[in-house]
Image (cartoon, rainbow, N blue to C red; front, side, top):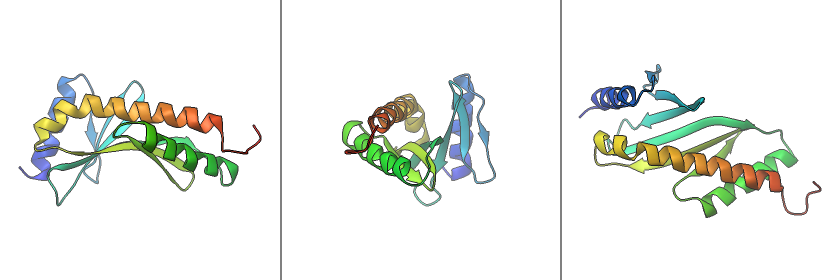
Length: 137
């Protein structure tokens, strides 16, 4: 199944789930759940690799905020199965990388992947609020 066919199957699945997915100019599938936008990125070369991303869920300024965000991202990797968070510039993202043998398998595990990402965001927020070691709060 080529990438366009996998996108079609995923979009149809998300519509059956009551969501309103769209596909952008980069062939990224975008859907909203509980007012949060998620991206599903399908790999051009590897039909078994998918990435679910919750983009730009928090902004941080350079300096102490950025340091806290990086440390909070480490906490997510240590404490939450599958999910991770990362900082790009002043934006914080969350996501999970998935290897699925078929697009149908991705459709089956997508709710659990969304839950993992939500758990990663929650853990990030807890760790971020706790602050960096030695920082005055």
